[in-house]
Image (tube, rainbow, N blue to C red; front, side, top):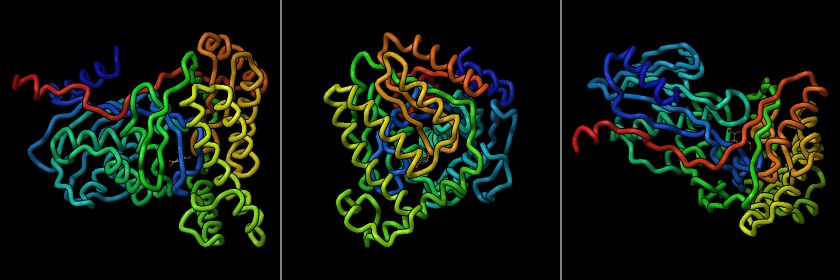
Length: 388
Ligand code: GLA
């Protein structure tokens, strides 16, 4: 049974009627450009064919009733009185998104719904951005919000920053909201311009889930962000996006050693991301792969956000036939890696890497081969069918 069928059944069970809308928002994998988004730099993510689905029906009042099939949980809250931290984490993303929308002046209607998805949680594939963007899509299906991917991504980021307490950037929400099927997106995180970049033909992206989960992410993540801000201040700029590598080399004296390394990662990563997008457009998988390998070294040694299992996975992947390059993807401290692999060799590659990884770590990894999915959308709308 598909997720859509499952949530429709659960909806009928709980609310004794059919949902009016089903909306979907995807998870993502980032090809390159890590921890550059909140430095107002460049990222190159792609939406994956794993998503959060939400089936809903409008209510006449200002209550939201929502069941999560994945967490076996059900919550109710009033849009009149949203209080932080009362519910389990998945529901805080739904409520926090509603809060961010109301804060920005949108007048929201209540709804009842059921949510479920297949984006692995805590794996660095943005299940939280997907639930935020599915919630925003739901309010937009009800006619409360005009769908503008960049604007709603900004509000998703506000949810993370001000409701959840993670000082994350805007990449995950931007790609979940605005992905273009068949393409990765080069996103300029200062201006929120996007440029589609197709995957070179005959190439698969293999997501390698290390079966490790992030721990203490919030503090590690927020600390990296403040270190980047300290570096920007040292250089007298608004964000590290404004510092070139030669300016960095000329002006890094006096920087704290750790802050210097964090800045070097961000500055070099911004340059690599632009080069990778150009190489993608030129169909040069070898060059994209090389940049991904360099990105991993920079995350490991300068940004210090990998861990032994992640480094082991990347090292094994990089040595296998058909692999152009591999790196950790996402916020770090656990989760997934991503490899650029010759499509014909992708399954042999996955099997060989899995066997060697298990031997080295004792862990059982999961691999997903994903095409580039489209962004958040309404996948079914019975209000239109009823009218026509
Ligand atoms: C997390 C954050 C993003 C981004 C990445 C690292 O996914 O949510 O904003 O900073 O980490 O690139």
